[in-house]
Length: 77
Image 1: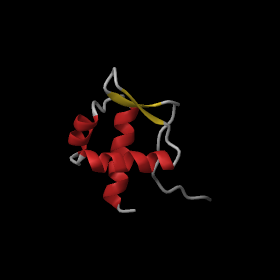
Image 2: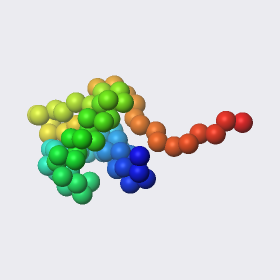
Image 3: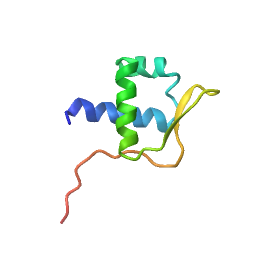
């Protein structure tokens, strides 16, 4: 996975956690990507176990469980 993919996944995660995604069109625009690419990232995150849903009434994505992604290296002593 490329570094910019990880940064993009972190941005997606952050926006979902703060419930600041907006509609798919707005969400993609905030990230500077196409809606199709957004859907690909969301599908990838769901494959990894992210409980992501979309609320049509609020017009925003959200996690159905508390949590978030953490992309970093953790060393062991």
